[in-house]
Image (cartoon, rainbow, N blue to C red; front, side, top):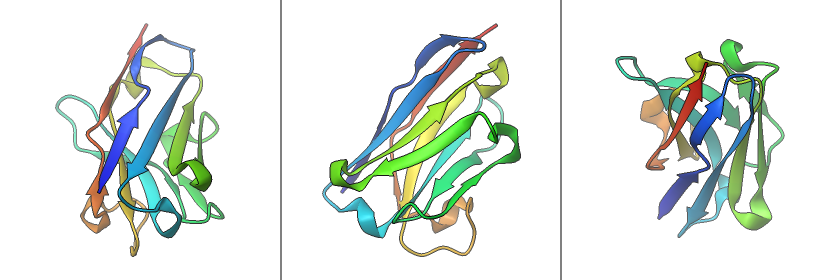
Amino acid sequence: VQLQASGGGLVQAGGSRRLSCAASGFTLDYYAIAWFRQAPGKEREGVSYISGKGGTTHYADFVKGRFTISRDNAKNTVYLQMNRLTPEDTAVYYCAATQFHNYYFAPGEYDYWGQGTQVTVSS
């Protein structure tokens, strides 16, 4: 059972990046997925969430209108499209999966985590 986050890299402020979270060893259909991020010296914070069938999405206020989460269950993959990036978006981005949760962004409620992918936004 594994989640593989990819797509990070160096991007200029104002640019875009698409992250992918691919699952192996289990079917993502039954799992809600969230993206978290952690910047140096800061706590991990929730960024975006999507329910198992994709009917519900949720975004942290600081990414609303800029980031879009989506999923392709046929490809067992969830995406995070990030637009209008700023240096404050620089962080390691993690995807995580859960079947049962009470909150969108409680890390302890997520069962599986990807290894993280670094996004660096230059000014």
